[in-house]
Length: 341
Image 1: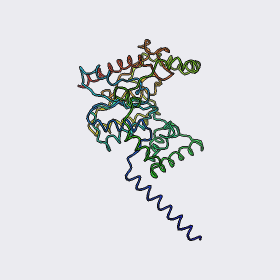
Image 2: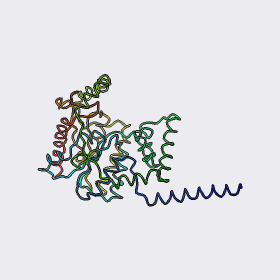
Image 3: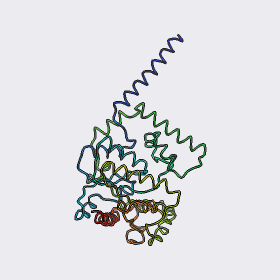
Image 4: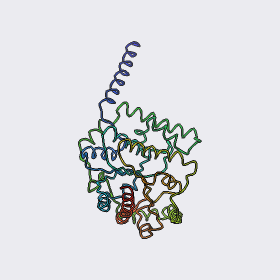
């Protein structure tokens, strides 16, 4: 009886491992968030359609309208751009996606625009639980540890990181949910909610959300937007601003993105997008080559846009103000194209 049970156990283990190896070998790679997978699939289905990709978090996704951007810069540089903004996108996730699009999908845009923000520590990335399990590969963890400012960890923090890493490894190896995800992404067409109503990856916020949100969050809004006053005071800040030593690792990360782009014949452009940037983020931008960076839109120069009434919540502009911001962004991009052509 004991030998039979042992034989069943060994057979079960061999079956699980062999099945997992086959799933890992033959199932498509899963990006860890549905919108990432849908945007990647959309680009695969439209090869050569877009010559410019814009990477960043939800402020990119909701604030930069590619169709309007293209219309504004076409007299200087004709573009066909796609907004690859994803909610809570961390710079390491951007690198992860960009490398796969280059190496696995063979995408070769002419230009790629990268939002500059600090790389978070591994215990904080990614935010969403599902993404956390799928994205936490060993190189990803090592890179986050190397760049992060967090040098002292509590035992609980380290345990959380290792738990995410091993959970992600198991999910990828054993193909958990991979079949269902593959079926869902491959079978159904991308909805306007995921790609945007005009098929450019851009989505806009509804003004009604502002009133609904303020009913419950007016105190939090005022507390969180104190930073806006501080940022407004930076209106005369020169972008020739030396980085403190602790920003060196973050700066090297963006230089790595620059080198990777140029290795594939792609012209990289770096930018910051308000709100939620500070002197540290600006100093990273200012120390990148001038021909690869956009002059930031300073909040103090445009009080008609950056007012409480134009924010849906403490981090996102409404659709009307997003259009106005896109026009300012387009002007900065146009100025750069005039300099480098």
